[in-house]
Length: 213
Image (cartoon, rainbow, N blue to C red; front, side):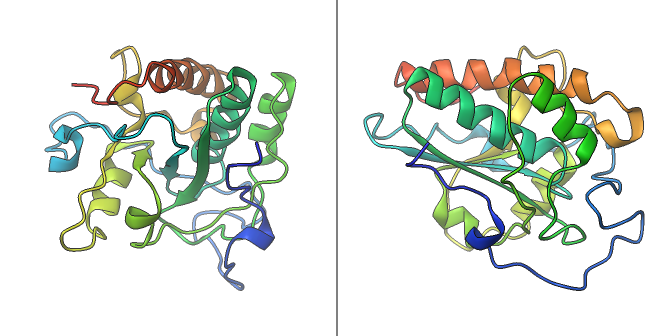
């Protein structure tokens, strides 16, 4: 998809020498903490209006998790492929709120699951979420409630870019995308991301405001 960002090492400012205290830094350490959303007072941004102010232009979407080696790069790769196949103009990228895996490719197990389903994640490299991302994108989608809170803490004063949970656009059965590192459920997580990406793309195609409420 020529109009989108390709999250390659050359496309991001990479940090060197970072290590994940919870695991290795070779793309196979723990990607995130599995934190329940029950009882969470989610940020005001989830209730904001959708970002589709000009459905004819390429919309810019950022997927965010903690380490940017499992869930968010998978959403990046899956959404890119689906949008390309369906002719939807969109620019996508992914990032992590943590810096442990900056510069690393997605977890090899996540890549294997994606590859078996026809998605190539090999060009992606982890980068850290930055406050400037609120200005670079039209919609920020977090994989779980904790990362959404961490993103909101970095929101620049006066910025109103919508930031929500990715699964706000799902079926409503879950609120957080599970962490496949701990549960070894990479295929299940991939299927969940595919399902939600389809629903998000359908809204884009219809030129709808992407307000899930």
